[in-house]
Length: 107
Length: 120
Image (cartoon, rainbow over all chains, first blue to last red; front, side, top):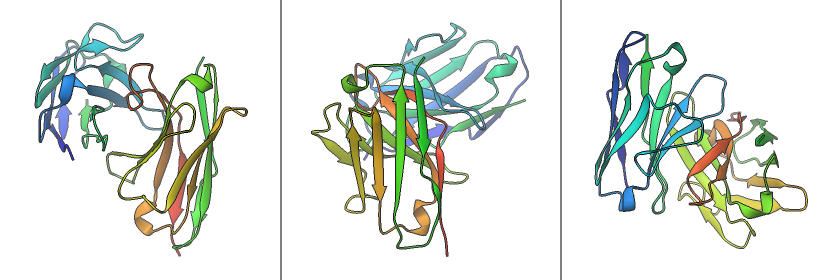
């Protein structure tokens, strides 16, 4: 089983600042089958990034993903008020399809 | 607009059973795999079970294998999760999630979830 470890657990930033979130896999993620999701209280999770770096439909270009192998990064270049949320990574290349524990981006 | 509406959650005693439903709309249901993903209070997301678009293939996490059964009715655009022998550790918000066109287990749309509480 691939274990995904996200850091930091919480990121305290202000609107307009840059957010850098890390997701580290316990073994190499095949073909960069790595996704990022955003979660807000009371809302359905939202797909942001797939294939490590491809933005999902409707995701603004201030949100970007990078990385390969075991180290992946989600970057929000300039935080908007709606970006304060929990972000989690997921690998979807092989069973079991696991998620990281999440990083909370707070004001 | 894609919509996934879960129902069937509630309070159940340990050892009991519950059936969750997820009614889908806004896309061609028969084309896509579907999954259930849960989130225990204060915890991260955990994939639980998935089913191919035809229903011919099913997949389970080790934590629920032998206790949960996923199925779908393509005539009703609905996917189900039959849960039995429930344990306290099954307490969670259960999300229905749609597989993307490129991968069964890349989830491009999610429902808002239905809460399952296992307690005596």
